[in-house]
Length: 381
Image 1 (spheres, one colour):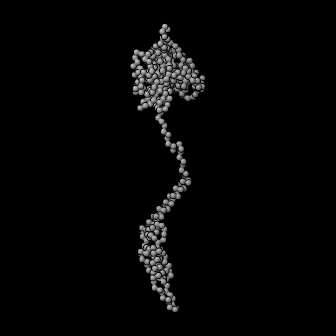
Image 2 (cartoon, rainbow, N blue to C red):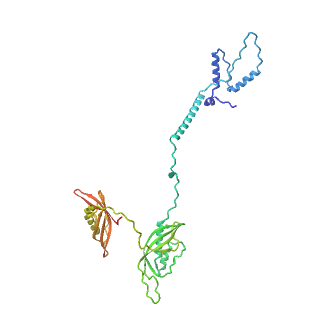
Image 3 (tube, rainbow, N blue to C red):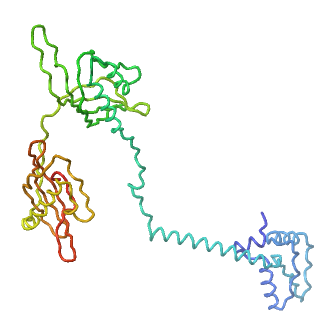
């Protein structure tokens, strides 16, 4: 059995064998008996000491019976433990070990109480969820530019200069593609305007781009038949073109021939928009201000009729004011007000009525207050 040293016994709180011996000596001293001989220092294990005593008893000579009338001698008591001198370092280690043990117990108790009194919050599923990876957006702007360049080259041709059309198409077609793109090399047609609009992405980095093109043929639409009068030349008109494109090697190119589609003749039905409530009294009060502004607007000098810091670019030459057909102020309060003006202009030998949204602001001077224009925008929005 391994022997425990004094330091280990004190850390674990076990009694010291020397304590047994001292208690025994104090007890014998009170009874008037002599103190037993000291146990050698090396016999510190009580079990070894007991075994040694048992061996000595077995090997000792048989005691002689006492004479009649005499009291048998009492055997001298032996101490079961060896005396070990306690050192100051051992006592300090024992106290330190107990202090560390109680500190750990207190710490675990506090952690357990915290988990009960302050439960851990469940993670927010929205914040804890990993952000979803989104595919990069299709380069719609580049697709519109490519489709517009293609449409301008594709629908403009001159039978006397076919290379010009081929060069324009080659810049936006794949390498080695047919630059004639189905043209038979006859006729003449000009492209006046190109407007790209909707981009519809498809699979494998492809897309379809809607382009509206204003064309003006310079030859009849169909060649004349023998013995008949030539067909008239069509005027300039819009036509739709849907162009297939694909993104490849960091660019957007046209993948093949497009398709001509129709152009809507009317727009969809407009939603019913609520008109702002009118303030007739304020409208009458500011009618002269609005008339002065549009007169100066047509003349190209609005500095005297606009609020300080407001800059309104003048109208182009050839536009003159016919009348301010109506002015309706919106309901409201405060130093900033808004209203709608309907104005008739004279231009190009004709009269044209238009609509404006006008913002007014109240300007105060030392002796008076007046309303002046702070901004003007075309349309009713």
